[in-house]
Image 1: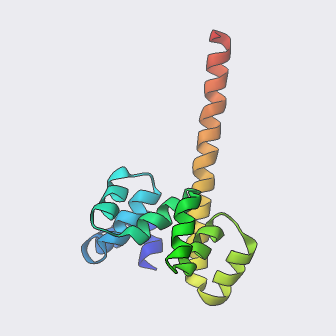
Image 2: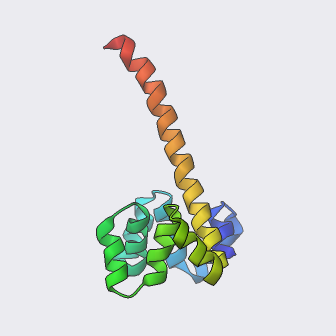
Length: 131
């Protein structure tokens, strides 16, 4: 639950993670496109979390690395973030809290995409008259 609250922006929970579980704080940062978070994960050899991050960003090699290294729950989690119904159902049955986290990250990614699409549409309106 601390992870969820920190991901949502609760600063007290984020500070708690930073103090006691810095790898999870860095993972949240990486998910939210903070390069320092991702760099911290790799520098401190949290390769599993770095690979999970990459799998969440649709990197098939990272997804395969998770599978090859027997991190099946992480691979299923990545699929759930990408709205694979079987993965969502499996998480819901076996790790309901992780299903909730996957949904939270998926929604975050969707909202980022909408913002990107909105910016792109605005940019198109600006660029077209100039072109």
